[in-house]
Length: 159
Image (cartoon, rainbow, N blue to C red; front, top):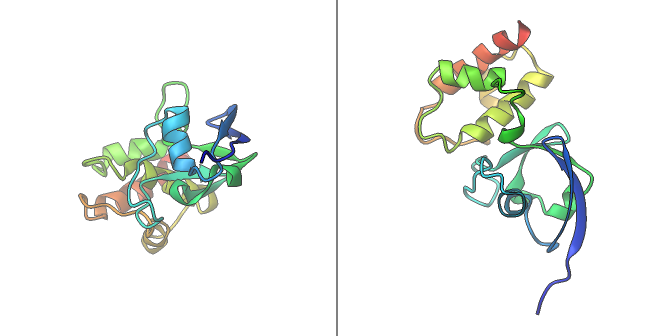
């Protein structure tokens, strides 16, 4: 039996998109499969690892936990949408300069979470950074470089 399809309209990385999809499709699958943006990673699929993090209406969310119809009318930013005009976002630059990139799998989610943190708190303490990133798992860096990068990004964003 085929599920009925629903039409959704949302804004992804500044582009308004309307598509039909199955009502039980996750935002993660919609972004990767229907839109073709592969920077949003598939991880645990239960909202625990943060690999699928996107910014939805200004908040970092696990896209594996959002059904596409729940995102109707939302403004979504993926990792592909954070840099502008060939320039890296300051958080991306900081991750590169501070060695917070290793295998890179968790990096998009970490960067998007850090962008949300710094938008609301431009001068976070190391503990505030740790708390903000608690939902993003990394198996490579040990987190020190990531925390250093977010601290450095805060400085870069003030320039």
